Length: 172
Image (cartoon, rainbow, N blue to C red; front, side, top):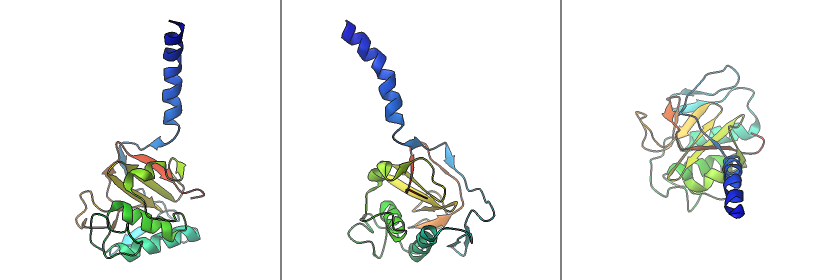
């Protein structure tokens, strides 16, 4: 009896501690332009803000290198350099270029990547089965209702984030 009561008292504490491991995203990702803080998209390529740190500039340059590649399931997993990318291959490629990831990862593994919550410059939105990222305010994603969504593309269009966990590289 006493053990059952103790278990019932510990249950809310366990639930609270489990939630501390990663921040859940809100209802949707929304682009909010802020001069000097956010990138913009010009002809499909991201143009970074002038004051972005070197790691962010490398991340944006990497995203620009692959933003015309097609989608292929498993693309970018055997090697960072590939002819096509899936969602986690895209995020892996960009984080590697920024010096924040040593080897390609799968989407679900990004739920425990880096640090919890929204980053200052880079945020990874991960759930089982899909991952996308925000770099300097722009979304880099392999889909979700964008006109040209057959592979990695920069976007300022909103997308739902229910069920996603927000993570970010340390320092960014």
